[in-house]
Image (cartoon, rainbow, N blue to C red; front, side, top):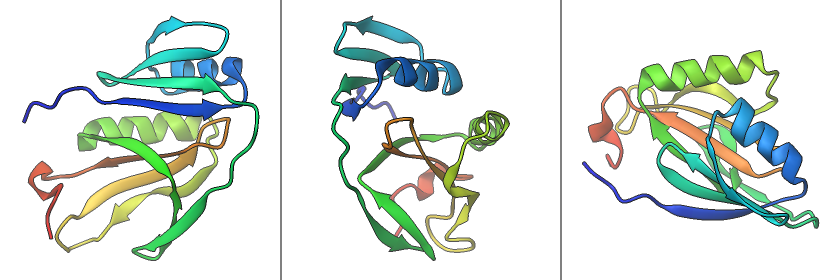
Length: 138
């Protein structure tokens, strides 16, 4: 399945912290930037951190026994990539909102998932499927 890259712009309160997290911890190469925003290559997708100093509130929805932060964004990786990133985030001292675990175990859509926040509080979910065919399973 070949997908076109998506574009997502999101608010950050500090561009230096965004650069350190998204470029350093997450390993996303930096693209164009200005004093107000930074482009990052998020596994072939363009995400843009825009400087917006005001904090915004978020909500949560219950999913498989956890309070999932809303809004959130993320990406689907292979199991090996997901495991390596989970280890990298743990080594960096990431404070997980929902620690790496298997969601919907033994059910359609079984997946590895983890949630954390970037330095500006944006919720990020990284997930993986042993069988990518389960991505939209019902």
